[in-house]
Image (cartoon, rainbow, N blue to C red; front, side, top):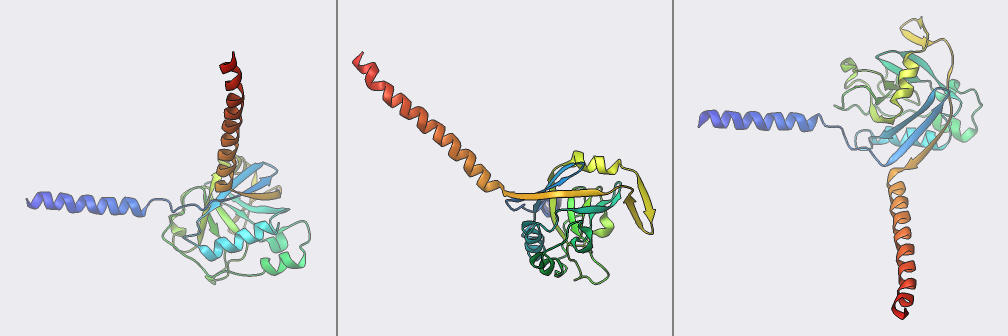
Length: 223
């Protein structure tokens, strides 16, 4: 009986551990960065880092990441997007600059830094994150709990692999590409709206087919 209880308690522990390691729920918003090496799509974790998500998504909606670039590509570690203040090739308007100069509180969590995760860049001040962020290119457990995770890549791993294959140079602690990796433009969409549009389209086709069938019915009866 004692052994049965021990086994039962072990199973409960294992189930609890497994559930705690599950990915958090992605929100319905998706962002696409269109680079000179392909597209990268990502989603957000609003339940994990709500202030960070709001800030980054607003920067996207304002077009702040357009003409920005990846200043760092360290194979198997991170591809890091530059701060939009100074990273863009195009000048910013006043609305963009005001938002870009804001910082967000460090929303650290227990979400693991594994390939595809989005994690905010910052200085030694834990509340200094602004607009630079990294896309993880491998597992980096030493970053866990130290940097704010706010989303993950949903499409575009082939683009990330292209970036990892580019020639690089070492500058201090940074591994940097020898050529500019430009984010030409960005756009966003809502997956829930897209599903609704698809369902509406299917329903419309069915209604049209039904209407045609109803129109044919009297003709068949008369015949």
